Each structure stands twice: as C-alpha cells, then as structure tokens.
Image (tube, rainbow, N blue to C red):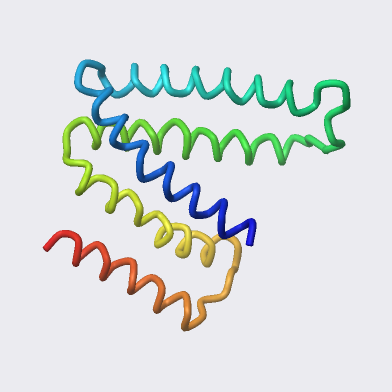
Length: 141
C-alpha cells in the first residue's frame, strides 16, 4: 500500500508544480528559474539528510567510479537538461500542452530499457505504450 500512496503523492506534487512553475516563469528566464529551483532543492535535501541521520550514522554504501558516473549522468540528463527544456517549454507554452507531452517519458524509458538494459518487450508494455499515446491524442482534441 505504501508504494501506491507515494506514487499518488508523486502524481499530486508533479501535477501541482507546473502551475507554480508557469507563474514563476513570467518574469524569469528558464535557466535562472532552474538555478533557483535547483539551489533551493539542494538546501532542502541537505537539511533532510542531516536531520534524518542526526545522532546516528549514514547507512553504508559503496561509491565506485562507475556508480558515480551513472548518477552524475542521470542528474545532468534529468535534473539539468530535462528540466531546462521543460522550463523553456513551460515558459513559452500552455501547461495543458507541455505537461502531457513531457509526461510521455515512459515511452522513451521503455525504448531505452529495451535497447540498453535488454529488457523484454511484452504485450502489456506494448498496450501500455499505446494507451499513453492515445491519452496524449485525446488530451489534444
């Protein structure tokens, strides 16, 4: 049940965030907005990390070069390039167009998962991808 609750919270936050983003972008260029957003998130995450492990210790983890490279690449692609493109689209376009189109990322994740991670392409994944595409078409009518 917890994963469902957190997934719904994610959808709620991700649905509400573009409204504030669009309002905040009226007087800011996308790159400046992304900097402010990223800086504030870094402070919030740092505080949460400190509070979470206050009086204790950080859980053990290994940080080898390969792991570091993958996490850095994920951050650059998602948090920098992806959000910069998203903020630019949000500044120039309507929330009702930008958000559904940007929410097609599961289609790209499916494709890249198959190509790079050798994940299987099952019928349920094909049907799910078609539903995402159909949903975008319906929302644009």
